[in-house]
Amino acid sequence: MKKKSVVRKFNSKIRIHSKLKKIDWFRVTLELDKNGFAVVPRLLSVSECKSLIRLYEDSSLYRKTVTMERYRFGSGEYKYFDYPLPDFVQSLRETIYPFLAPIANSWMNELGIETRYPKNISGLQKFCRSNDQTKPTALILKYVKGGFNTLHQDLYGEVYFPFQAALFLNEPDQDYEGGEFVMTQTIPRSQSKAIVLKPKQGDMILFTTNFRPIQGKKRFYRAVMKHGVSEVYSGERHTLGIIFHDATN
Image (cartoon, rainbow, N blue to C red):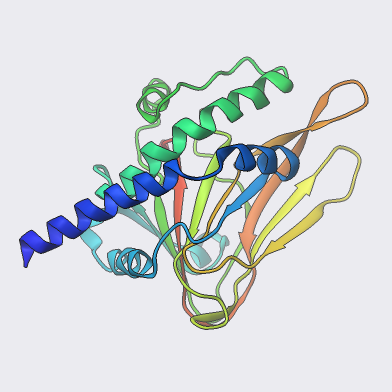
């Protein structure tokens, strides 16, 4: 049984690596530039989603558990993975990052920010370590009836990567009701714009961590974005979060 389990994990890692390579990254780039987010439908299979949900109960995989109510973050719970990350999660992090790094550098250039991001995740981790950011930030979040997540940004220190990913592990209207993925965009001297998405099981949303560039009359300016989760009315909702920069604690 153990040998079969290892083979399944290996095959799943190969499959997700291959599927990520086949994504239309040109389309993703256009959508990130236009909206600050991009949806990749059905990246994960149903079985992969279920396997990730089962990981939530394995306490040996995690470095920290956060109860949202305690910090007024909302209502729910999330757990940060410890290093080394599970193979499947590590594969997602390693494979997605190189496609996003050129977009991140293009944004920095447009906004006149000197920061440039390395080509691979190991280079970003070195950058994080030099700023005392050594703790992994990949996590799984769980919401039950009444759960929600207040609008926020996942910034854990001076170093942050401009993009992150959320992978949705349950089917809306079947496993849970409510629980939409919510983003807000705020531009200077303007009211905030709300964006509400209802991703399906296996979908991945790539979105900006902090802000995105918008073309003005003379130059690009920053539009600050935050994200959260609306109230879950029934059922359970699990999400895998892939954040590329590390944390100080």
